[in-house]
Image 1 (cartoon, rainbow, N blue to C red):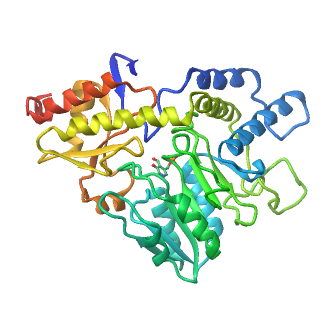
Image 2: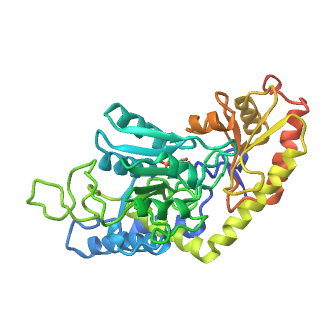
Image 3: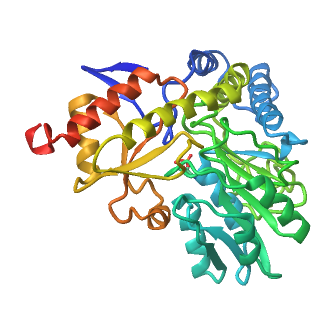
Length: 393
Ligand SMILES: Cc1ncc(COP(=O)(O)O)c(C=O)c1O
């Protein structure tokens, strides 16, 4: 779907960063609630405060249904996936603990773990293969009796590679190891069932494939896990106590929530449910395969990641061309928005062989079309043909 943005027509291919556009119902919900019901949820006894609290509860229930979470109180809202991941990792890990992760993680996981490592947590990184995949065996071998946590992303934001979380989770549960999934790239496209997959901690943003607006994310916490809160403050409950309430979600949620954004997140989830996750996934995979196939026919192109599309991401490079220059040309000359560089995941680029320059990343979303993919392929063909360089623009 192309947009008129100011004086420019833009084709957006950066859905792995944030999905855009959103379904109309999402814009409508955010606008409607901003105008009619933006009282403070859970803070007052008056009519509008109750209405706002209902909206927040509905969003919690929607997420619980979507991820098969039996108690929606175990869902704590956050600002984005990064905040949810920080709440989980800093709330769980103590000096002396041992964590197993992978070489494909986003800095949202890598940096908190690095900080925790400085504080005495042992961090073991399982090396993925060149396609960005780890196996259950790799994870098993990296775990020892002293391992507290296995944490990994379900789907890579660099290659779209899916990890076998449905096998890793049940094994971790058998071993008594806490299992945490960063579902930033998969929530809303691939089925995630916290019960069947034995996921203890699930972090995801609302603004990617759940089709919600920016500024909302969530953390699911299994009932048996106790996290030390990262933030302390008002919850509208137990207000005379000096300590943070033990009950979820207030234990991990304080301050005023973003009620209009949560209403819009609910609308996004309803949209995904109506269209169907399988149909969304199929559309994105078809576009991704079309793009990969087209790129594979071009000279001097190196493609990364799985040959058959998994997540809706294609990473590639053109020989002797800086990805930043290619991204600039796509944007400036063709009005095509892509992402270039390391995509906040330097370890993943070391794994697939594209460090330090990174890649050009194309991430089609539900609203992109085959025609747009073809436009992009034509643009890249022209750039490769050297009919265009940054200097000539
Ligand atoms: C795999 C992965 N994890 C975490 C994040 C962080 O998400 P957010 O920007 O919502 O904090 C991203 C964002 O692109 C991601 O791709």
